[in-house]
Length: 135
Image (cartoon, rainbow, N blue to C red; front, top):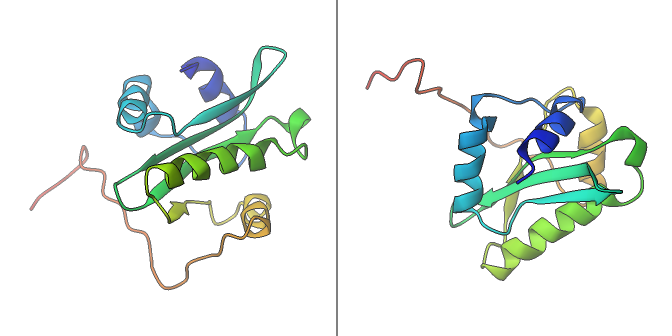
């Protein structure tokens, strides 16, 4: 994995939010658990697009799809998504989820154009167990 180049792309892309889970050691573990599902696009030896993909055994998940501004609207994002979905199908995963920041209207339009639909029947909840977990 070209961690530094991919992280640099994600950090420079509006609408992509990184956290502790995106540290190098966490990414390496994620990729080991989900081999052959995440992809990067290169032009002239430089990473211009990347997507993180994995699954829980039942559902696929796409994270951090990004394409550098100078390379947008050339089909790179769509190709990255297509590769991820094709690989998920090969291992028997037929449904995929993703997360889009509420204010990222450009990303929402992109996903809707590809046929994805917003779920309004569920609410996502998170717990950071490193901060507090008292059960």
